[in-house]
Length: 62
Image 1 (cartoon, rainbow, N blue to C red):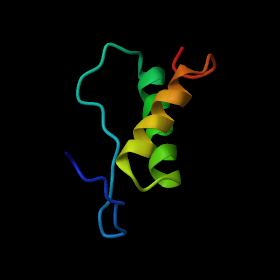
Image 2 (cartoon, one colour):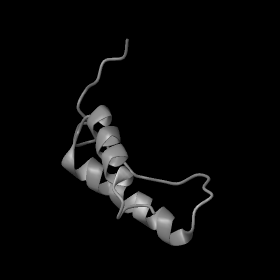
Image 3 (spheres, rainbow, N blue to C red):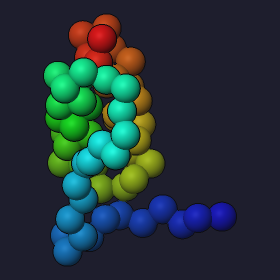
Image 4 (cartoon, rainbow, N blue to C red):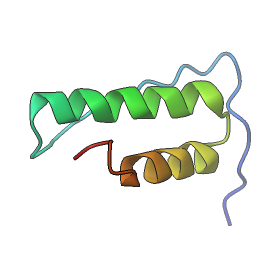
């Protein structure tokens, strides 16, 4: 069991793409969505849920 703890102000999260089969525009959109999620939420599970929901929208990452 992992304990979900809020990310403290000291911890700086940064979105990065290590490997992708996407265009540069799609990669930038993915970074933007991830950055939005990290600024809105402090729990990793919530950030991931935001990214998944936002990326599933027809206007994002398509």
